[in-house]
Length: 220
Image (cartoon, one colour):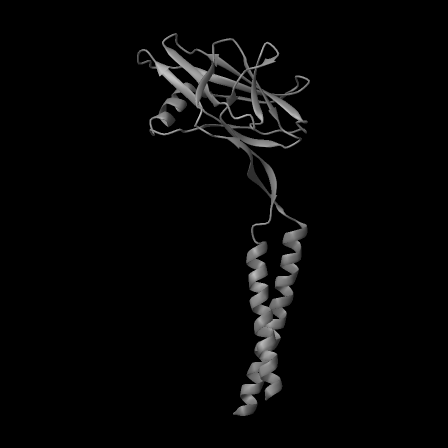
């Protein structure tokens, strides 16, 4: 009976050693080969000095500059205020274009103004996401142009901003920085290691069991 118990402990010890080795290999792989993900890299959402900035108009570009620092933006969130003098079936669209500092188009898309209106119905400060995909290196500074398309005269769409000078996004008018900083949140590509801590904890547990079963074996 005692011999069988010892053999059982020895078997558990061997299994723990094998599991520890596998977990160690997986841990090394997770560190050396991280997965692609996204993370918030910059934001300015302080509402203490909230102000209304320039409006998005039909056929006229509203230019913003952002210090990207070579980061590939995946999602940009801006905050708008919409005023309607009367209800409109179609409130038009906002076209946005990301450009490099030299004017090369990196990404362009659009979204309906009705999307902003729906988001504002939540009753709190809600941002509008502007998805983006940069195929090339964006460089240190990128430009974001906003242009209205089919927005009725009864609808007014303006950016919300504040006086926070720490924001990396600025509005530019005729080549001169506007005295205010738009509210925004920027997400960019990032290397993620989502399983590293889990693997580390499992490895520690497997090593602990390995040591305990070895000690039990020796005591026999």
